[in-house]
Image 1: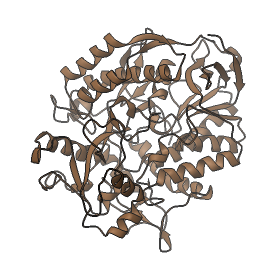
Image 2 (image 1 turned 30 degrees about the vertical axis):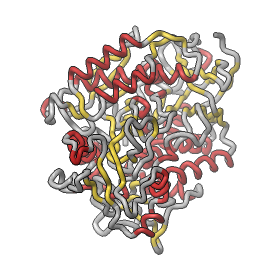
Image 3 (image 1 turned 90 degrees about the horizontal axis):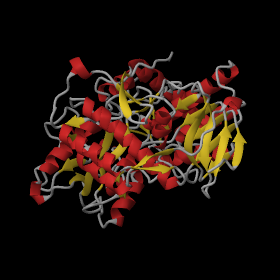
Image 4 (image 1 turned 90 degrees about the vertical axis):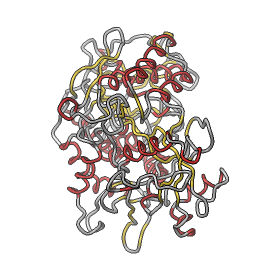
Length: 540
């Protein structure tokens, strides 16, 4: 299938969530010709589903004794030894200015008297999470950024799916191959492409992510020669709303802030889940809470093996309805009144702690390719993300990546787009999505072992068929297949349990051998292999 249309830009941003729109607005303000490419409607990404808030220590608006340094320390503790301390420090320190910029764009956060209202979430030692609409922070962030982009006339191609990155014979980026809404292939020539495609939740049957979270950016980057790192660390949110046996697709999130306000996890017999598990109890880091719930469900307390309960009945009913309107509405929709009944909850795939190996300025191992947001592995999250650091990362790194692209373009470090080695639509393996999700959920979710990981790899090898990427569904299925294989390679290699990566056959952490990140690359034949430690660095 030949190229039927063409566009040009200085910077193409793939994705329209917090990281992508922040990058696009920053680049536009710097005078770059920017084009945003997004495969659904501009507001349909993951950002709008974020409930908790933005973790940030604002000058003059923080708990006594709280500080940026303390936020950094909480992030490092949650990261279980794999966070990059320089990256953590740089991103956390950039939070106050990023939130200030966002408020100037019109984002409205909840207030408490003269200042912003703050809550506390798992892993935080202070009330430092600012929020909007009670539990609708992501929706407000997305609204403000999208309005600013449209008011600023930032061009967008909605319902266009990125298929492949175009490069020079030497491997530098020269553009992007795209399918339009009718499936017609086109070329966007650009010396810089910024991936902000979000996460990979659709690898699993149950997830808090929307249907568009199909790991597109990781697959694009790997096929272009970039490295990915920490892919084995997939965070399962401890508390998505349990809507019945066999629930599939996007499950409503019950924000961690509900526990921050005093709700308690109990099993079907009424026994507390987190007693004696961790010093922070119900506000322990997410990997700890999700694993504790999984262990408790395995014992089938009260005959219930697939969920536990979050008891918020002792909280003031009016306050709960005002503070958590999204959670309240989702509960009522399944016949549960959270002010009088414990909320049925279970863990579900939520956030990719790893991704495309990149610096805090978004630079990857491929010249002209940048990454920001959940698709990127900056070193912030390590083996487990601290609650509400994701919107923060998107705001900070999105802006920094745009500035880096502008600087690289001005310095003449990027490729001449006339050197594009134009290729046809790629033909790559894709496994049936339903089968992939079933085996990943069974063998590569919270509890993993060598035998189960080998089963998934074998199933994908047998079921994946080569297809030209001619439709959105094939692009997504191929991305899920490639990312699953890369995740399996890392998960099989890491013979320990750390953070989100729980190996039942290796239940303990091994700092001597494994206190390091693993990176993955593709062989010339397209197979993911380990590439050694993740060592990409930049000045913070």
